[in-house]
Length: 380
Figure 1 (cartoon, helix red, strand yellow):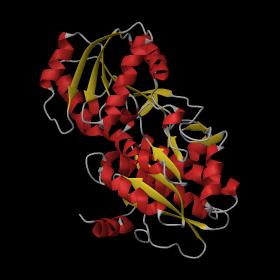
Figure 2 (cartoon, rainbow, N blue to C red):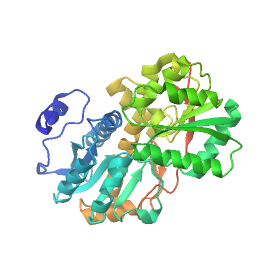
Figure 3 (spheres, rainbow, N blue to C red):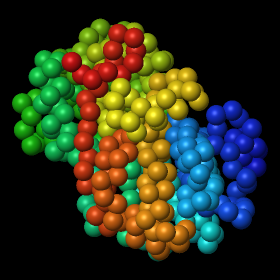
Figure 4 (cartoon, rainbow, N blue to C red):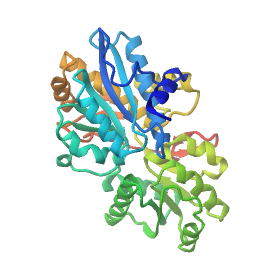
């Protein structure tokens, strides 16, 4: 599908974020931000969910009167799960003076790819969902992340709580060696184990995106007598690994971070999922007003369980709105400066504060599990 056809589909599809056309000049009275997401390709599951969150954010803002009295438009572009495409699109957004900020790219591969380009721009860029642990100094001055980063310290805390609740002592780790995000998360898990968790990492197996038969790797896990399999891959492979492991007799816990929060996994594997535990910054059952309103809008639009990447994208747009209001004008440099001084912003995925660049300085995870009805509930 070429880009013109794709844009026509997105503009006409119900529930999708429509744009007036790629890189078109804004109409009078509009504020324009760019959007980068893989809507097609091997990572599209996450990009499509992010697209839903973007649409809800834009609709909510514009129904409420816009920003600074002006309508918000997001020019969402498909990176096609191709990092070279993400770089090209970001350069084109940077060359459009009316684009005041960019939401995206989604995920680790595209975020790592745009680092050298982002270092040359004075444009607030909010990456969504990347999981590679990075120091503040690793970020260009205009790059921020909207997600919960699985640092070794955070993962150690999660593992301790899950081990106590689910009687876990021995863990096996699955890693997609072709995926930067999977490798980064797996390294954080290994580092967390090195901090001392009372658990043993007794099996480590790798595969490549697109693999279909995991029987040999699962067999090694079972011979190692694992109580839990930590999955650091993506939806495409997780929905294959889980039922294959259950068929082989694995009765232990499937465990993971942001990737396991995709509701499609549970929808596709059904009763094979539990026990299934993940850590996430988003609890759809929270009574915080910002969460209640977002969940209601999401379920009205899509009538399904809310995905974390939709919540991340929603927060990213709302963070841009917050920065624009504090900047007082749709000026790139003013918006970038305001973004870097964000303090105690209440998002649906937690409270956000930025110290000039990089990651949220106040992350807080929830530990969730799949309940009897297939929904995510706080771990018991």
